Amino acid sequence: MQRKSSFTGLLITALCAVVSCCLNKQFHYVNEGGKTWEKAQQYCREKYIDLAFISNQDEENKTWEEALDHCRKHYTDLTSLLSENEQLLVQRMINSKGAQMDHVWTGLRFLASEWLWVNGDPLEYQAWTGGRLPHCPAQHLCCGTLAREGELWGTRDCEERRNFLCTT
Image 1: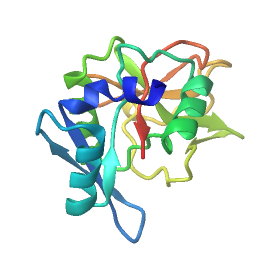
Image 2: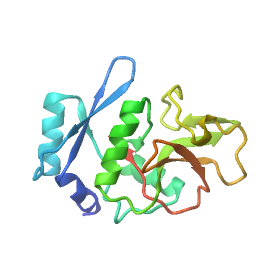
Image 3: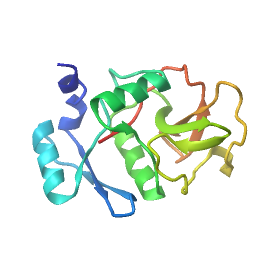
């Protein structure tokens, strides 16, 4: 079953998400190895709201659109990063999973002349390379990435195959 194979990296580490009334997410890094998906999800639902995860990155290299479709079909969406703490926690997670690329796909996309999170979250916190929002990216550089190191967002060609981050 494809779903179980993409959770193998999760059995070692779990990432729990708390969603407040204002849709601001908080992530809590829980390092309790040996949990099955069901046990990790049960733990996070008891202690927080739900389990967020990163699919097994060794097996998952997709274009941005393929990653979006995969996340929406199997989980909830490509991830959004709403705070520095959330971003640092996610970076710690992707580094512990051994991402193959220096940048991984996020839910950030340039559409209709603006950058947005495709799940509808507000784009308030920003950590762009160079410190500035790219106002008019080159034709194919319309998809957002998160760097494994340096806490910076970047733009990439949406057709590149990369690791990606899904949330539940």
